[in-house]
Length: 498
Image 1 (cartoon, rainbow, N blue to C red):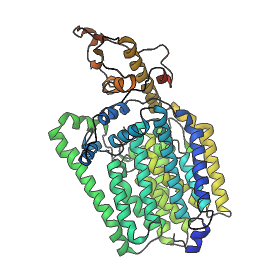
Image 2: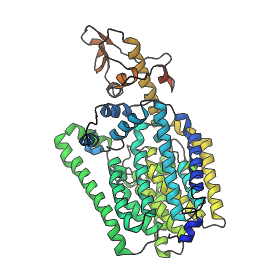
Image 3: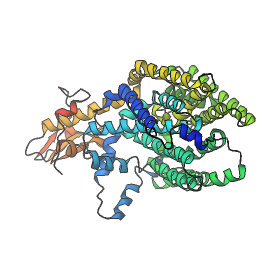
Image 4: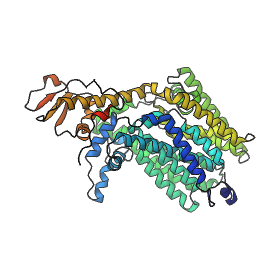
């Protein structure tokens, strides 16, 4: 949807004293919504995968520009290659924020506000209206699926990818034509280095250009979009080559574990059920922590059907109904945004709606703008979404199994650190603990980083029968008394000297 220079000036995007008034108000409103919903997560301790990434980040030391290459060494493997949102992010956050969990969780909250702000900017360009853009951002911010991504630092793989993804869409809509292809393509490459979730970007960009912007200049459009599809295809090809051919030869056990954890399902009912679960995670009024299977399948089928009808109707009507074009665009962005996870029925995390929820929000708001006083109606509906979210879903999400698991793992990490601290003495050189999925991640460097421990902590399969050595202490259970709270880390974590 094109805007004239006059329209842009009236919209407050160029010139005039009120140029920054709306963006500032939008950021303030979104920050208030996120704080009201998830402010309680600020100060929660690191959990599970966080310690594994910190262990890798601890090994990186930058002395020359060539040392930056350490960030791009595949970890844990190329199958899950996310260098910018794992090791690079943790190293940078550590350097800037220290190891204070409060600062890390505040940063996590801030990135979500930034994502919602970009959702506003994209919607404002597509809908040509600041109120409609704000309504879209509020619906986006109220998506229950964001909760775990706010709580768990490790889900910056989603949060950071979403930030880059939305930035790319906004640059495409905002940058001068002579620069936008190269600028957007560079951002897309950065997105792929954030995570595989960015691979759907060419499809979302095509939906934005053809439906959202209403472009029909086929030859020129193909020439502009072809580089994105080519880069995306090369990425997918490289990933498939590694997963299907190279990894089974080089790392057969690791490849087998990856395939079992990320097993694909092409069964239609399974795909519809998975889609329905993400519909629930994207729209607050539909949310329930454990939606029935039948309901999910119906929601998934309706989403596909409505999307097909909207796309066909949009194509037939051309530019005569802009709201329909943006609705169809939003539905497609929702579907393609879930592309990397839609075939993974055993790996469903509501937080994966980070990208797709933008499409769902556009699909909700765009039709409302066609009504009389459509902007006011859109804002009223968005306010209803926020009210449901703050009154129900922001609390209900904490009952999800995955969320409770992460919370429990954070507490368990503190209890293990507390037990080690209590058992170690001045002469301790080594502490032996049971080997499990928590301790093997936790005691890479966590005892040194958070307890300033000069001793080694070694997870072993049978600590009770470990050979007795001078200076060795055996700890078989995590501490309990006084360390079971969500912020109990403050009782034991120290600020260690550099």
